[in-house]
Structures are given as structure tokens and as C-alpha cells.
Amino acid sequence: MTLLKQTPSQTVGPYFAYGLTPTQYGYDLKSLFTPVLAQPHAQGEHIRITGQVFDGAGNSVLDAIVEISQPDASGQPVTSVADAEAKGFTGFGRCGTGTLAGNHFAFDTVKPGAAAVGQAPFINVCVTMRGLLVHTFSRIYFDDEAAANSQDAVL
Image (tube, rainbow, N blue to C red; front, side, top):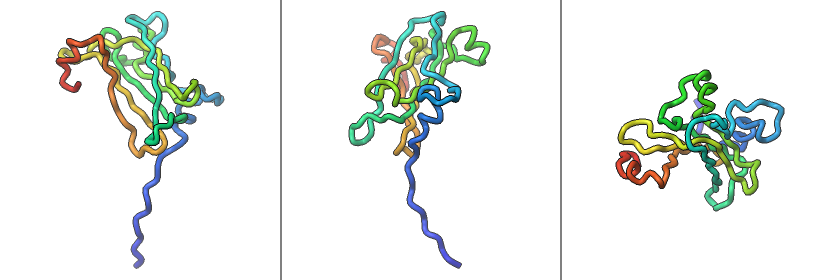
């Protein structure tokens, strides 16, 4: 019997942005999620979140995907398609980094409310890109929420 040796690990991608945000990259397929979470009639303070993703060498990445999820302005999650349509707010967005100048991403959303007592308002962030074997998670907190931030157990 021949013993097989372990094969080397391989990195992921670069296909996520093209496959998961096809409309953004000009493909004739419908994107399931877009960078627009809030329609003009959505309740709350409308905000735009922008940024860039950098690789280990400090270069901006043109084919990463950034996903965000959050509750609405009153801290309530979106629970159904009907709920999202009524509120004008989806609660989830996805943006590739390769179509805006400088490989930026941009989301149009509303500032979330606190999801529970003792929590500061935050937005969940997930980044997937080539070279990462596992996607990374983070949160966005707001500097104008000093009192809530100081009591948030995670922050």
C-alpha cells in the first residue's frame, strides 16, 4: 500500500467579487445583494460607509468582497422580505472592491440602533478575498456613541 503525502494548502480566489457581485462588475447576471441597504424612505440617519481592503504588502485589493449586516435604526433586525420591503431597509449588503476609484467599497445604509440593552450600535463586517483561507470578521462602532461604547461588553 502506498502512503499518500499531504498536499500543500492553496489560497482562495480571485473570483469572489466577480461571482457574488456580478452586476457591479458588468456581468449580465443579477446580484442577490447590493451595497444599498437603505432606500430613501427608510427611517433613521442615512449614512455612507466607505473604505478599502489592503493585502499584506499594503496594496489595495481590487477583487475583495465586503459584506455588512446590521439592525435598522431602532435596533430591530430585518426578519423577512416583506419586512425589508416595508421598511425600505434590507439589513445586509455586499460590495466588491474593484469597481470604484482606488479599489474602494461604499455602502448606503442607516445608522443602526442598539440591538440590545448594554450594547452600543454597531455594524457587522465580513471580508473575503484571495489569499485568505477563512474570511475575517469585524465590527464598525460609532465615535458619537461614547456612553454606549464604554458599556459595550464586546468593545
